[in-house]
Amino acid sequence: MGTLFDAVGGLPTLQRVHKVFYDKVYAHPWLKLFFEGHSQIAIENRQTAFMATKMGGDVVYMGKDINVAHEAMYITQELFEIRRALLDESIREAGVADDLRERWLRIDSAFMKSIVKESLEAFTRTSWPYKKHVIIPKPE
Image (cartoon, helix red, strand yellow):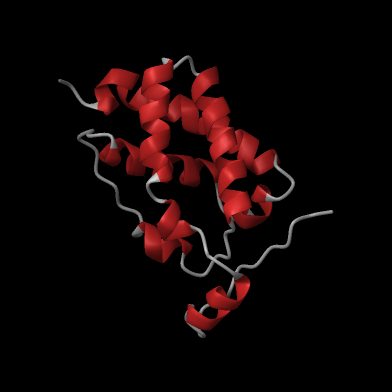
């Protein structure tokens, strides 16, 4: 059996999905605030390489470990679910078959525990004091 990476169509599909996905993220009133000052293309490329490796592709991911990359960000379950819904829409829009889309989302969701913080109190108590905390309240 081949890899999920091959089944979805390799890098071209991941690149297409992540372009659509980050267009949505950068337009979202809350999520976009986490990306201010960050190049969308650079983020797309990092996410593509990251997911390619997780899907079994022969791609080198040069970004930070997921725990380190999100350590100073206060990401709630609600934010994660919004992000997941946008990713789901983006995968569908790219024409990925439902069974492959579900596998993709399962892989993506496996990182939830590394990203989502249980509470603001726990986040501020356990995160590194010398790092700038990224805490973005939900817009009205």
